[in-house]
Amino acid sequence: MVTTNFFIRSKYMGKQDGGVYIILRLSHIPRLIKIRKGSVQGHFMAHDQLYFCSMVKEQTPIKRSTRLAALSREHHDSLSFCWKIKQGLGNGTDAVALRDYILWYWRHYMRAHFMREEKILLPYIANTALASQLQKEHADIKELILALDNDPDNNLFSILTLFVTNHIRFEERWLFGYLENVLSDDQLNTIADKLAVTTHSDKEWTHPFWSRK
Image (cartoon, rainbow, N blue to C red; front, side, top):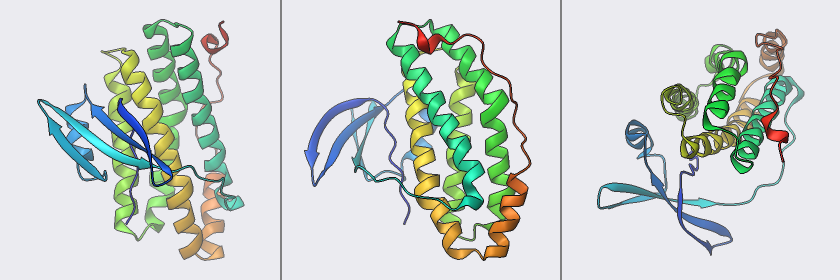
């Protein structure tokens, strides 16, 4: 069984069984509440708000196959994207400026990355739970990013960075490991050849808000 932790807004934090036990409140995005209701370890209702419980354990880095390295490099870029958003939130960058950067990154990089994964990897994923989780998380992140166009909200920016970070963790630790274990060398080489064709933009964002003091 594959599970993914989603971190929305912390209401309580404490130590338990070597991990961090977090009770989280999901707000602003009711459709995602429905999607995610079966993907967490526990939940309960409090008035009109839904809280989720999740266990988080620290992980050690995993060395991935060179055949999937192109996607791992793009994951590194997306982790940098999340870091830049957090820096902007910390230095008081205007919400509209953050929204514009997020939409720019989606249109020039992340959208193409999602399409590559779904076009190239999905045909090789016989595990329906993994395939479903890949598609659902892509859909959730896309929905959240597009919602920012009309609602540039700092809380949603924080939610986005957590969604993206946890999605990358799922792919690197679960999905890629699955592919390396079940596919032949010929199949992995075919994937690598397809990934060698770059489809995203090489443009750079020209307003480095994340470097502001």
